[in-house]
Image (cartoon, rainbow, N blue to C red; front, side, top):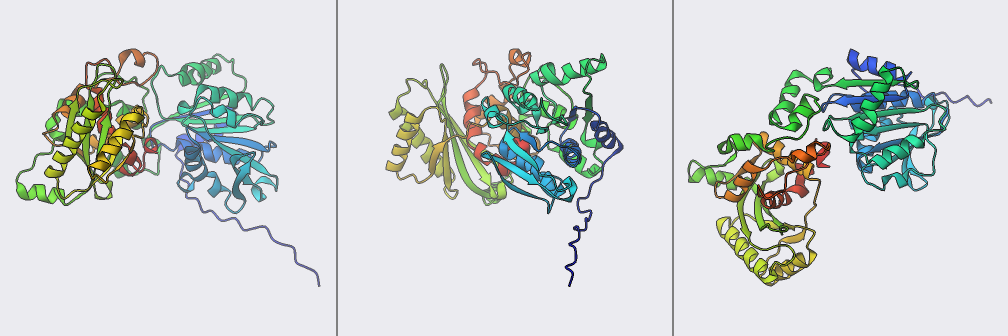
Length: 466
């Protein structure tokens, strides 16, 4: 009896694509262009466009190896591999699997969509100076990169060079707007645009700017919700909502500086305070040991259940430079701070103590003193996440009303009111908090250390929190 031939799997539309005309035009142009750049606000659909176009080209390219990158490997896998159901692993569902290729994370694709030809997409992080080493040794056909402005320049150059022998050479980049002086514009995006306009870019350059208002899948209500998460006076609002390139200038926490009382928690009566206390899950303490001519600072933050809110409940400082601070004085001062905190909030557990990780000998001594005093809180290094990511998180929590400060925290209140961006660094294309002793940077560091390890839970939808 003859064995019946196996049938090809029936293809069913399972990904709910909805593209606006502007997005469709961008993707159509990508077929004829080597460089494809989508820039704009958050939730604009930039990455989805590039993934869709990249996947379409995977079906017809003759190159076997391709590259997908983000600022980190995790970012690349999350935003290109998965992409909330719109990523490569979903587009090629049933025809792909994750594996390793020469030690790198890779998505193997082979099936009807690729005419049974094997296509391998290698995933990599690109944010570090040595990231390029991970992609050396291979020749790639296409390269898709999310948050290209967060890639190190050495990574960008290496990836471009690694596609020189491609049969179908294509790049798909996306980014949120950055400082207009950033090197990604000067050395690549704007440089290519100028050449293309002059007819000097024969490989084809496709650039489009998008905002969340161009994304037909975002309802007006959701647009308003996203806008409400930002302080309109910040660079993040201009970049992430309006999709504008802008330099970091002026006061960092402008809404706080203009109207501090809006962000300071004052209780009407005893019962209101008791109700507030019942919503607190734990207290976390941040410690910054300061630098030359600066102070060692302590800040305690109360984190509410389900990470819905954070309240700064106590702060303090002691004199002493990082290089010659008296460890005994530090330990005694901290134990006093801790005991005062316990007396003020006896029912709230103090679970964490995070300290400046650049002074291990001080942390070790502090941990020993705490254990001798019977303190059971976990004591460890601060995460030292990028300052701009910490500033973004703090600004977002303040703007959305999820971060408040008790009026007794005079040091932090003064620090938030006086913090400004460094104008000289802005001219170099960098977002840097001014640290010239005109404002209390140390209190801000300690404040951020007290909650930075919870950023992913405080802002779960933000790329910057991961």
